[in-house]
Length: 77
Image 1: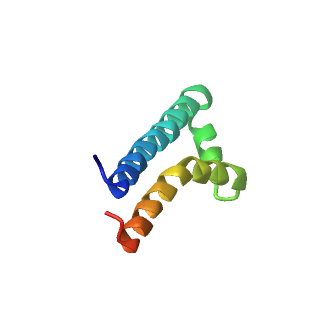
Image 2 (image 1 turned 60 degrees about the vertical axis):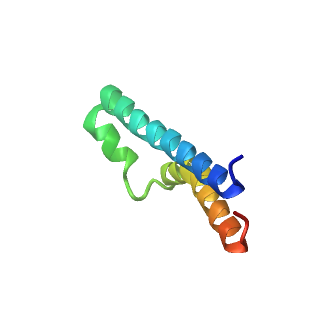
Image 3 (image 1 turned 120 degrees about the vertical axis):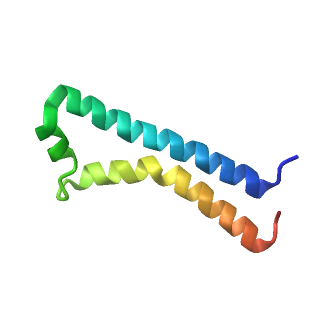
């Protein structure tokens, strides 16, 4: 059976792959519908809500990697 650290790391990679796909596919769909001006509005630094949504998309991956780090630091292999 896999250790909890390995399971958390594998889960983190799965969450990271899903989050990257969501952001890339969403940006591509926006480019296809709204064009380059729509993408420029999306990545505008003053658009805080978009940056919070992107951060929330990557949060499960970050949390899973951090949990694996804490488990390894505690000595649970």
